[in-house]
Length: 204
Image 1 (cartoon, rainbow, N blue to C red):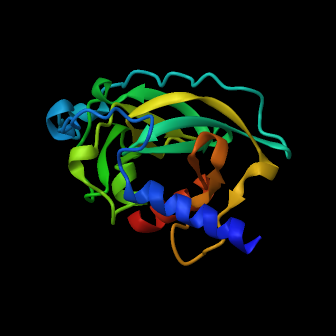
Image 2 (spheres, helix red, strand yellow):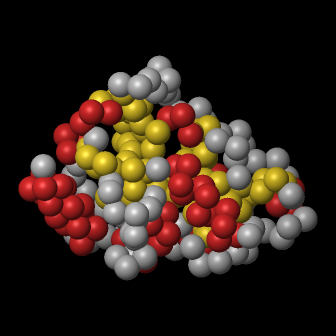
């Protein structure tokens, strides 16, 4: 069992160290300039109604035996976001953002005070590996409650992950956002409840 945990740990480390994994386009990364791609607006203009989020096609609700997730690409990593915490998705370029906030926040949209804040997902999750030139954010996954959304490069597919097949993250000292890994999809599963707690604490 100890050997298996070590294999999982080394696998995740390899994921975080190599931003150009198998399955990611091997061409020269296109530098994304989100500041120019998204038109900044004043808070007065930001009150204009945004397009409604597109509902992510979902499978049945998660059960005790399976975790139903949407797979997304992000900074060369594949992340699994549990459907139970997803409200929908939107194209980043469709949003008129107020570009205020800390460096780990791309911007916010909606109407005050009910802003939806878009997280620079790579900068928040893996700041030690973050490289702006690898950021190709095109999509936004809106989490339940609409207070937070995660930027990603693209939506991949829906997947059912057997709970018994999840290699659980055990180290509470680092990567607290990580629920575990799932080897068949080579993905990291997000602990959304923990992530939301940390985001709220950072804005308190």
